[in-house]
Image 1: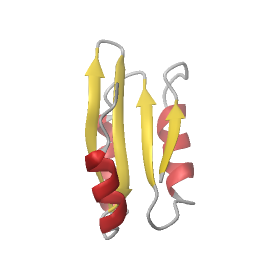
Image 2: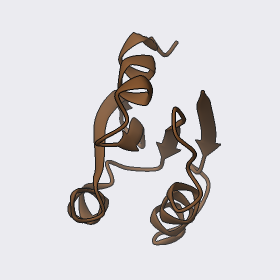
Image 3: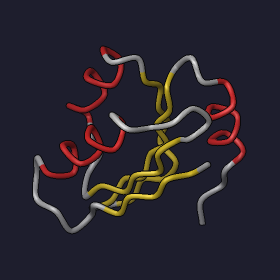
Image 4: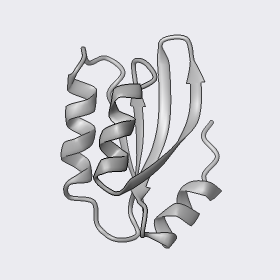
Length: 86
């Protein structure tokens, strides 16, 4: 199941903080679809450290969108891979 967060209008570091808060409650089979105002490079090391995988879904000037799921969650990984954003 996809959980959508649109954080594009928030100043740093709020998008990163909200993503981490949402991931702390992520249920098995769920994945996060997060839009941020920029490519969240500082977040990636934290995700890897905490056992999450991710991929960029879309990137444009002033906007990045990524899928995030628990590395061990094959169902969430498959669901996010099958998702094609508009």
